[in-house]
Image (cartoon, rainbow, N blue to C red):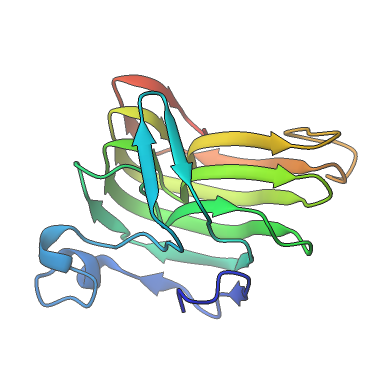
Length: 193
């Protein structure tokens, strides 16, 4: 439910979105735009930056399941992915883990990733963990296009690290991330971020 940005979500089974996002009778077809990214606020893009007032701040555990056939065709929209954006203002911590996004077909404008279009890391004592994520398929955009995250902004506060190899006890932990999707972009692209 998109109204509960602090909730904990755990997949109980694989989810195949192929029909629902790519067929005109599908639940998430949206006149050919496909999946509407999970979002809790509007994001505004400016040259070389994006501003989102809020984002997903809960927990998403794929429970080692797959989301298959995620289709997004929004070439004129910025901040595109399964989740539009994440922003941790939850003291319990924000995490995404244990999911495979298989055979994605995602097109956006700027800030495009299979899992998250734009991720604002953390502030002060809050944590962000993104781990054990795999992506296959095709991802296309103009600027800031990544296999898992389109754009990652570290956040503020003391001791901000992207990876703490001693057990992810610092503010940011991105580990066990795998992408074999094809990335097409004009500028600022990467296999993971």
